[in-house]
Length: 193
Image 1 (spheres, rainbow, N blue to C red):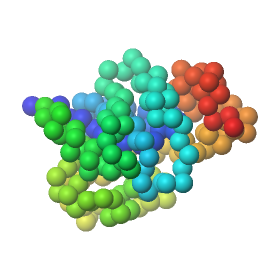
Image 2 (image 1 turned 90 degrees about the horizontal axis):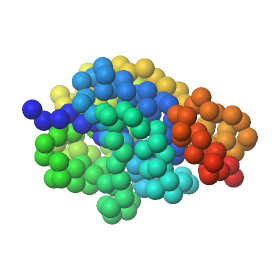
Image 3 (image 1 turned 60 degrees about the vertical axis):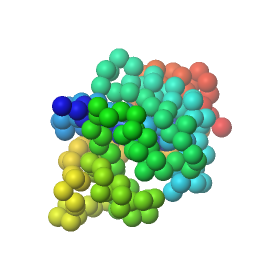
């Protein structure tokens, strides 16, 4: 039997407890064996976003997941052509890891706009997809293809944008971040300016 691996893509700018709690839920309650945090260099649908350096965000993810064997940080997209497209990522992963059955993890906010994704028809046809809830985005589960499943995961209304803005404003957001991530951000003065 192949290892069920969730692909959790995102900029993780920075990774926060909402990301971690969702991933933990999907492993423990949705029968995924593991989750790979796929750090994205630049989302083509979010071109205006200013990102912390790729390897600094990768380090923050590694710090966040340290000690939990079912999570892994991946820099696969760093080696792929820019901008980063999901179709290229899943093709690369399937070729490199034939022992795994991959599941794309997509928020309801992205599912609503899924038809804007490059080669979305092929992604739909060739992949398992788990859609998780996001506040303000309703998903019509009746029209979902058989390989797409809506999971009733808890909603964590925490955003990386909120955290970055709070840090810049001098607010203490230590409880929004895993402890070692918070310490690294503070030590390196990430997002302070």
